[in-house]
Each structure stands twice: as structure tokens, then as C-alpha cells.
Length: 88
Image (cartoon, rainbow, N blue to C red):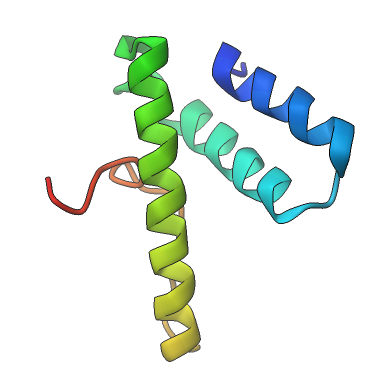
């Protein structure tokens, strides 16, 4: 089940391009939400979910840079920490 935030993003992005990098990150965030909703996201307010999405995007950018530096390494959005700030 998509959160209202993810559903709104999917609608906005779908209108522009179904195969965009943004659509890919939204799909990964939706998968993350579905995998970990019972553990944490069901407690999020809409504002907290937006903050979680921003942290998720930042973490996926970091993972992409690390992967480029070490192509043999494995990085995934399928972790309960994918929405956390590096500072925490």
C-alpha cells in the first residue's frame, strides 16, 4: 500500500516520464515503505515521511557514489536504516 506521499510523487512523476531516475527512486522508496511500514513508517506524520524521503534520496546518492568507486561492493535500499540521516 502506497503512502499518500508516495502516491502523490508517483502521480507527479508519471505525468512527466515513467522511466525517469526520479521514478526509480520513488519506486525504491515505495518498496522500502512497504517492507518496513509495520516497524517504523506507520508512525510517521506526513512531514516526517517527507524528511524520511529526503534522507532516503541522499543515502541512495551516497550508495551510488560508493558503488562507482567500488563496483564489486553491494548496496541496497532494503535496510531499515535507508531513511536515516548520516548524522544520526
